Amino acid sequence: MIIDIKTIVFLGFIISLINVCFLAIIWRQYRKHFHGLSLLLTNMVLQSIGLLFLLMRGILPGFISIVLANIFVITGELLVLIGLELFFDSKKRNTYNYILLAVFGFIMTYFSIITPSLTIREISVSSMIIIISGQTLWLLTQRLNLSYRRIARVFTITMFGYIAVSFARISLLILFPPKTSDFFKSGLVDSISMTLYMSLSIIIAMSFVLMVSRRLLEEVQTEKEKYNTTFNSSPYAIILTRFSDGKIFEVNEGFVDIFGYQPMDVIGKTTIEINLYARENDRLTVLGELSKGNEVFDFEIQFKNKSGSSITGLLSTKIIMVRGEKCLATSISDITEMNEIKVKLHDLAMHDALTGLPNRILFYDRFEIAKANAQRENKKIAVVSLDVDLLKSINDHWGHDAGDKALVSLSNRISDMLRKADTIARFGGDEFVILLTGINNKDDASKIARKISECLAQPINMGEESCILTASSGIALYPDDGVEIEDLIKKSDQAMYRVKENGRNNSQFYCDLN
Image (cartoon, rainbow, N blue to C red):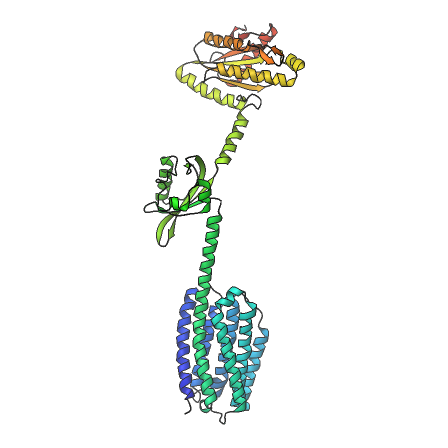
């Protein structure tokens, strides 16, 4: 019993329409994500049109139902090759295939209209399927990387099927050529061939869907690996918490390194339960900003690690959605060491390198604070300019190291006898300036000046010998002698130089110069 070829073609047309609908759904969802899907869908559309033209043979002109029908089918095959090249990012020129398609069109026209030959037409169609499927097979097995080859495995097997069926068809057509020019009565060879082609077209459609699914799965896996790599290799501590209850559900290696907690120590707990924030107000400030819809970026906060040690961190956090749930993604960079360096640099900028005393900049700042307090409390301030007497003789006799030792000793002695609110600063060389606060009158300043002279009278050990320092000092009072620090220092210097002129080792008030 000969199988009805027209029925097979009709079934193939129905299957092709189903394939078009199925691929149209895939195309609509992922056309902007993957290249080449439009060509793969167009192939299915051309296959359907070609089968429709074939079914209408006898109704439509022969050029349409024979020539165009087969050209559409083969063009669709070529679009599959080009579409796969785009889908797998392996595009190349196909000029020779376009030429081949034109030659095929000429052959189909010649042996359909001028010299009709069903055998040559069928051999030509099968040959074109072998040529294009062979190129597709080469693309899938040789030109793609190993990952893409795994994705296209089912499609690769299907291409083998197309080539095998087409070779078999050609062989049988040569051995048993059809005795009629009517395709629908051509016999068992075409019936079996069409059935196998129809079955392979179903697998092709399934392969398209499978390739898209596997590409998506691979990309998701790649993104997951990138996320895990970035998340765990970040030098910052990253914490993911649920917004609803504040419970931590993931931390990275950076968090372990910075805070000393293992994931099992913190997952399922809140930052309050692990006592992460050193100050509760900081945590409330961050939550307040987030509740307003704002992101928090580089907010400096004090934290505590597992051992209870203080850590200074820059916190950045924002609200994200994880599996449809509102969560917080928080990153913390440890700037403890950097802050310590900043403090040290600031300290160096504000203090004398040799004695560790405040320098001119810090002294001026201290004066402004003392001035505000004096105005509020109706007190006076004494600015004392002090020079070490005959420091050069110490340098000449014992060397500069001994001179430095004498300066350090002087600064330590005066610092120890001053009150906490008072300040001694070194402006350079043997020049010191003292700020005395809370002064009621000249007598208060005089008493402190005498104490300074007494503390300097103690000998300084210079190895086998010792020396005694003396100093000359001038005193200017705020607000009696001036209200600006530069003016007061200038006047205290004038008083100090008068002491040097009169024999050194004494003190003088500016107001007593005249």
